Image 1 (spheres, helix red, strand yellow):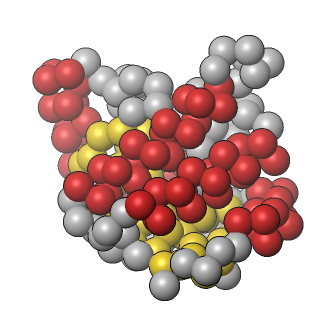
Image 2 (cartoon, rainbow, N blue to C red):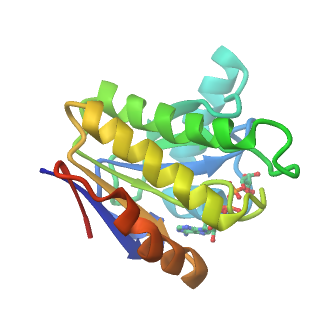
Amino acid sequence: MKTIRIIKGDITQVAVDAIVNAANTSLLGGGGVDGAIHRKGGAEILEECQKIRAKQGGCGVGEAVVTTAGNLPAQYVIHTVGPTWRKGENNEAILLENAYRNSFKLAESLQLKTVAFPNISTGVYRFPKQAAAQVALRTICEELNKGQSVQEVIFVCFDDENLKIYQEIKADFLSQDIEIM
Ligand code: AR6
């Protein structure tokens, strides 16, 4: 049985195989969870991001790349870029789905067992929280059902509003194969 865990907390403190970062296309850091990850993880993360930039020019919206987690308790940081909300008229839901899906697939390709996600796009990028949570849970349930390696996904909610939304909608995603706690 695979597990989804919903917790309130700071993702930089979560000891899993990979934490996911809500980055921007530059991969050079920023505010929000991205800022916290670079600040606490140390310079090694930025150095690897710069190497990825030199090779492929950053990270597209909905795509994902991986670096070390530096000084963080996790082993890797998977950097993905969620969409900026523009009235929902620019494919935002699909792009957010891609961000979750491609991050998960990267974790699978690294044969990781545990992955923690923040609430991508719901801060600076202003994606409506309720709709974003639906996309996150639906996509991760689909991927857990298809995947081989990842056994546990943790949704780390930083604000009470997101925590409440995830707790409220989790019942809609219960299945025989995935336990949601
Ligand atoms: N742990 C977990 N979640 C956090 C943390 C933390 N330490 N800090 C904030 N959050 P945001 P976005 C939550 O703005 O909307 C950056 O400048 C926060 O409450 O970090 O995808 C990047 O460089 C919110 O629910 O990311 C990009 O330019 C969620 O993380 C841009 O922001 C996402 O908020 C990306 O915007």
